[in-house]
Length: 227
Image (cartoon, rainbow, N blue to C red; front, side, top):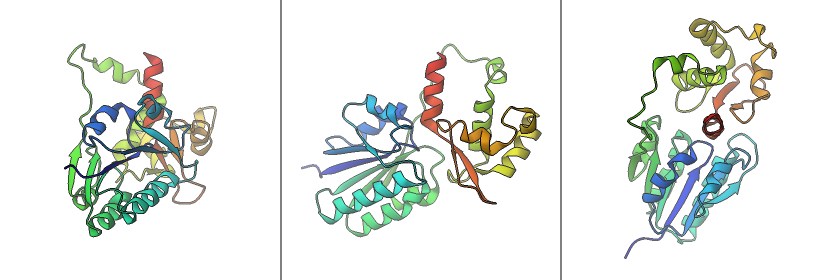
């Protein structure tokens, strides 16, 4: 007899394009939820078997609510296998606590998932990026990428454990790698630039260590609209 299974998805960290892959790792799950700011994770609603759970727009609100619901379920002994779909190292503690309570924890995420999170799970499965054999995109397409796509690529390259990149550091990277000076753009400064694009970027509150991160779902929707 299979164990009662619950699926918890970090909707702001994992793109909905991976929905079918993730569901294969949680067959028969009686709970299937995607957490996050519903304005940013609407694409998860395209899968009728997954319930969207709105956590609000606060920083890490989705992560906190996901962890609380998972622990509550474990304490009630309603599930014995927990599938956590995320590449965020912040779920390392959740996976560890669940295993301490005798639960099986199956992690599902991308290559960027930190080692600590992978090893805290009973088993960790890597998601496979969807690729098409033809037609192959020529280098010229990369050169014509939008500024937002270039910025996101720089953030993903220099971010550690999904924490994002400090604004000051990003300014240096964009100037060095792409010759972009924010002062030459209408927004004039990076903070207003990102604040005006909340569907594409997540920005920390003001502070000397403020960081910016990409919103995967925002860019997947942007790509779909461009097709």
